[in-house]
Length: 506
Ligand code: ASP
Ligand code: MG
View 1: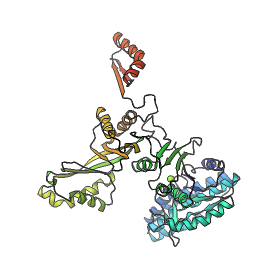
View 2: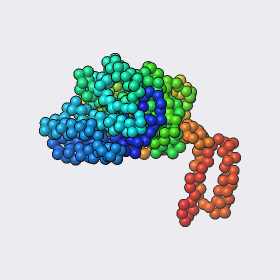
View 3: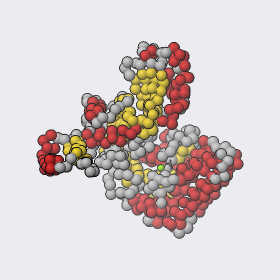
View 4: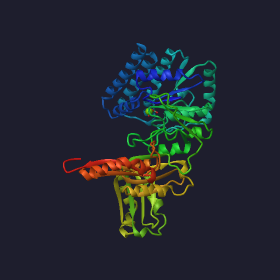
């Protein structure tokens, strides 16, 4: 069971988490993130120290007071193990300040402290709930490569070590509380698995121990059909497949770390997403099972997108241009999120994060300097303030007509699409629209593709705005209200009044 930063982000939440754990009888491993906000503070302190900015001390003090406050509230005292870690951290930050240098290795060492402190706090709280528990640093068994900041596990090396360690704990009925996010190289240097990597830790450990299930405790009701802040009628999904979950996390839904499903797919270990703030909710179960033929399950969005265009009639039939476009893009270390080439071969466009756009265009202009002089390529430009919206679902696969449905819904609602891509995995249909239209796009797709909870699932909505409420107008209004249910039943549409106006107001 992994508990994310908000689930262990305050004394109250740590208590709640301990209660949840104490209610589960089976052998279990608890994986914890740092308290929410701590990892950011650690990184900020390290960067300031590197830059010679003495204010790293302020960030350090903020960490100290947050940790101490938590321990005092829970236990009435500070835990010596945490105090020791804090002074180690202070020394490390002082050294970075003195050297004026921060290597990736040192940054990982600094980042590791949030999780390393938190295992002591959570484990101590478990003991107060009469659970035998021990704090465990994952660097003891989770062996990774040397890619600091984005390390990848070595399952073979880790398995032997984990087996020995945990079988003893289970025999003695001890619940280990393990650091998420971190591992170590074979010779013991601390590494991190990338931001948000505690999910990944949990599934790695699930793999190493052949767990029955991996439970990810977070702060929302599992995986939802859309971001509920944007789509009011979004609902929790009960079951999704590994592929759908990966696609969703790639396309902007913050449910699970994109890499976190890798360790469990082969072994078919189910992953459950649960809500610490609503523990009775049964959660979203992620398994290999794919269901819902012909259905879209969720709508996601990535904001702050630029659409980069390479245009030119001369490109027609000239081989290798696309390859050069994308190798140039790769050289700038930009992430290309979506690609589309018009079949007329006169335009290649791709979506990238807006923050990468300027350097991409500069690099492309340099790459195609010759071609631009010769007129083979006419322009290289950017369409700003776009968003990628994706409809995701395993049911899209080999089911005809879903893209057609998606784009006719958008067309009918007056939403212009600037680029389209369908992944060859066929788990998604993605397109680029203006960012300001993206929320509308999400909402109309969500409703008309039948993702809503309402009785009107999948029906077209007719929005009525009535001008004039004199005797004719009010009679019409009454008539519509009276017949609405009937009309809706017969025609399959949903009718809703969105406004009424007259000369004096609306
Ligand atoms: N504490 C780490 C982070 O904030 C890992 C995690 O929360 O999963 O990125
Ligand atoms: Mg986190």
